[in-house]
Amino acid sequence: MKVRREEVAAVRPLGLLMFTVLFVFAVGRGWAEAESSGSAHYDVVVTGSEPEAVAAAVAAAREGQRTLLIDTKPEVGGLFTQGELNSLDLNLTPDGKQLNKGIFEEFYGKIGRRTSFDTKRAGEVLKSMMAAEPNLTVKLSAGRIKPLAGRSKIRALEVAGPGGPEFITAGMYIDASADGDTAYAAGAPFTFGQEDFRGSRETMCATLVFELQHVDWPKVQEVQRKDGNPDTGADAYSAWGYPQMHAYRPADPGIRVRALNLGRQEDGRVLVNALQLLGVDGTDPVQVEAAMERGKRELPSIVGYLRTLPGLEQAELSRTASSLYIRETRHLIGEYRLTLEDVLENRDFPDRIAFGSYPVDIQRSRWGPDLVLGNPEQFAVPLRSLIPKGWTNLLVASRSASYDSLAHGSARVVPLGMSAAEAAGTAAAYANRKGLTLQDMAREPKMEHAARIQARLNEKGAGLAPIPPYKDETRTHWAYPGVKWLRDRAVVAGGYRNDYRLDEPAGAASLRTWAAGAALASHKPEPVMPERIVSKLANDPQAKLDKAELWQFLQANGMQETRWSAPTAGHWKEDEEVTNGLLFMILTELYR
Image 1 (tube, rainbow, N blue to C red):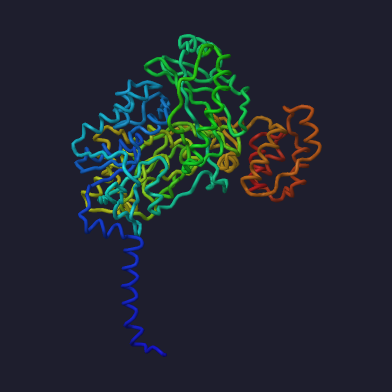
Image 2 (cartoon, rainbow, N blue to C red):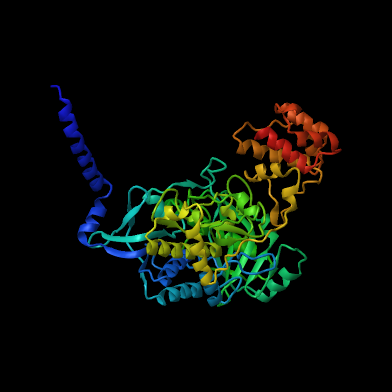
C-alpha cells in the first residue's frame, strides 16, 4: 500500500515523540522517576572520598552552597587512609615556598606540616574539616552511583539503596574520584594510560604500601644523612634512597622494587613505598585484587632483604595497606589539556587555579624503567583542565583531570589536586550564583569569570599570582626541538637537574637506546644497528659514537643527509664529534 505525503508528514512528529519517550525510558528513566518521586536536591554534589573530594566539598560549602559528598567507600581519605601513602610530594618555589595554599595548607598544618604524616591522623583531620561545615552533608557507604546524563549534562545521580534507587539532583557536579568514575560513566571523554603518546593502555605501576615494625629510626637517619649520596637523606619523619634495592631480584616477573621511601607513623612504625606492580588496570577490581595478592606473596622475601640494610636489621612486617596505590588510569579530555611542555616550560594561564612544581616522575611500566623527564620551577593548571570538553555542569578534580599522561607525571600529586579541587568547588558555586554553565565560563574570550573565581580563591589565601619568568638555558639551545620531540615520547629525560647533556659526546649505547625508543614511539620498525657498533659495544659498553658509525647507522635505516634541517646539517659539518644534541636532532628528523 502506498502512503501519501500528507500521511508521512503526520507520522514524522509522532515518530519523534515516540523516540523522545523511548529515550526517556531507556536512557533517562531514572531522571523521570527522580522528578516524579521528589528527588533530594543540592546546589553542588561531589562524588568521591579522596582528599581532593574533601577539598572540593568543603570549598563549595564555605561558599554557602548546600553541598553533598557521596561515595561508595566507607571512609574518606582514599590514597592516605586506604592506600596508606603517608608522604606528601610538595610543590615548592625555587626558594622553598609552598605553592599549594588554601584548603591544602590548612590540612597540611593540621597534620603537623611533616614530610611524612600519620595516616590515622590524616583521616581524622579530613573528617573534622567536613564536620565543621554546616552546609555539607556526607553520605558514605552508598550503593552503586549511576549518573543519568544527556546532551553533555548530568541530570541526576541514581544511588542504589535497600528500598530501591534514590535520586539526587544538583546545579553542579564535581567528580573527585581518583579514576574519574562518575564522569566516565556519564560519557565524558577520556584517554586511558599512555595511549595518548604510546598508543598503549599501559599505565605506570601500582604500589602495595606495607608497614614495618622494630625499625631503628635514629640509625636510619644517621646512615642516610652521612652516606655521601646526594639522592638519599632522612629527617625525623621520612627517609629516602637506599639504592641497594636495585640489587633485589623478585620471584614474580611482574614485580619490581625501587629505592625506598620510608614514612614514620606516630607509633614508630614505618610505611614503605617501594613495591611496584606492573601491568595493573586500576579500574578493574579483579586485576587489582590479583595484584594485591601477588604483592603479599612477594613481601616475605622483600622484608628478608630489607634486614640487610642499616637500621632495618630487626624489621618485621606488621601489615599492608587495604588498597593499592594506583598512580594512573584515565585522563580526561577537557576544554584544555595540560601538556608536558606546559609543565617543563613553566607556563602560566589566564584562568590559573592551581600551581605545580613537582618533577615529572614517570614510574616504571612494562615499557621501561622509572624516568624523571624534567623538573619544573612552577607551572599553572587552568580552570579549563577541570571541565570535560563540551560539558555544562560537570567538573573533574582529581589526578584524572585533563592532563596528558606525561604532564600527569607531575600534576597527579595530592597537594596540587587539593588546590584544583578547592577551585572546582569555588567555580561550581560561582556558576550556580550567576546562573552560568561551565561552557559560559570556559569559552568566555576575556576570561572575566575565571578572573572573578581567581579573586575569590585569593581572598581565601590561594596566592594565584602570575608566574615570574624563569631562566631555562635548554630552551635556547639549538637542539631543543630534538629534546622536545624525544621527551614528548619519554625517550630522553633531563632528570631532577634538567640536564640533557646536550654538548657532551654521545655514546654508542645511547644511540641504540634512543633510536629503539624513537622507533617504537613512532610505530616504525626496530632500527638496524650496524655490526661495527654492535662489536664496539660488546668490547666497551661506554664507547663513544663517532661520525662514521652514525653515518653507517643512518644509511642502514634509510636516511640521507639531504633530508636534514639546515641547523642539523650545519652542526654535522662543523662539529668534530657527535654530541647528544646532534644525535637528538638527527633521531628526531629520522623518526618524526
